[in-house]
Length: 140
Length: 343
Image 1 (cartoon, chains in turn blue, red):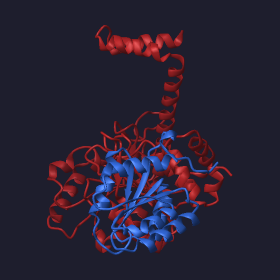
Image 2 (spheres, one colour):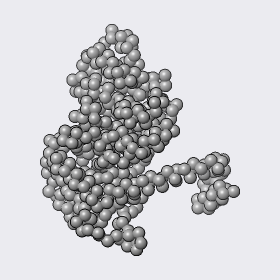
Image 3 (cartoon, chains in turn green, orange):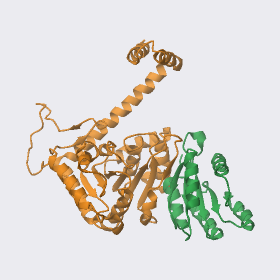
Image 4 (spheres, chains in turn green, cyan):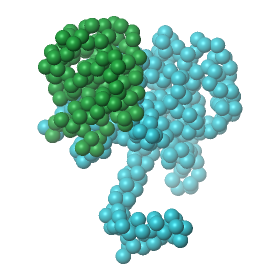
């Protein structure tokens, strides 16, 4: 009975956690995405700067989100992403989808996708694409 | 295992998911509320309200930290932020100020959007606090949206209501208006290191001196705060013992959240308020008033649903159209619809 029920077909709002792991302090991108998702009718929980994967997983659990968006500009995505995925799995939240925004080298894209990341967005990505992908990801 | 069993066993994931069901008012959520009800009534519900930017979230953060350290309480926080009236979306940012609480398994923070509800809380906020109460949290802190003058719903829900003000938020005429300041059990001037704190305190103090102390039990959506009446005479109940029924005068406290100043005093003041409520019978009165309103709301909802089952949607639309065309008045329309229901 306690299985997850997600997606708009349940009549519920899509809940997204937008988090900023790592030590860089540039959160403009995260805020733009948060605002865009809000304008698309989603409920966005914003956690602020310098979050550890542990803090993000904790917030994702408490807020029972469908999706986590990570903003990573520090180059640490190949360390932070698997760690977060592992923590979500440990918490029983392997159904939570992850997307990443930031500076991600092309050679890492494939590996991130293989880990289960649903989307990677670099500079110039359109918010429409992100919104569409998030909606698609939660209905899967 | 059902939601409620898992929540009573302390399963945090089940708690998080049940909160979603309750927030969305699903059949599972409602069923769990029924099962959890016998386990409620233990937690201290603390409401925190005030204008945007007065530092409510930071204050809640500090208060929760102190309850963890000093009292070793399990603390739940329900933080409400507004939904956009246009898109229904929301950015819920209260967690940004509460990062100190991260990593503590005995703290559970849940953000929620108002989803169109006015009054400073969301429709399901009260039910969410019930879930936390049943889950064994000692204190549930409810942070409202940045409230203006009439977002007073929180006083109906909470045992103790803090109204947070900050220097420079308005002159003394703001302080004597009805509404938000009236619901305060404790007035907090946050950011008290800022200039103008003296004026703010003076304004609040004069507001309190002008007020006639009454036993305030918040009832219907801000319409009435009642003085308890003697059941037989209908007159205000006489004080049985002047020491135990002494009126609570809201204290004015100064805090600086970001420096953790004044938080100990605030916690002590909250504890004094609880002791006062317990001693004066105010606790039971508030619980009773809260449950009464809840029962009323649910009854109204049930009647509404019953009405909709009996009156076909088409008939309703026809009557609505008549009103829109100015053929009949809304009052006549209601009469017509109710007659249809009784047939």
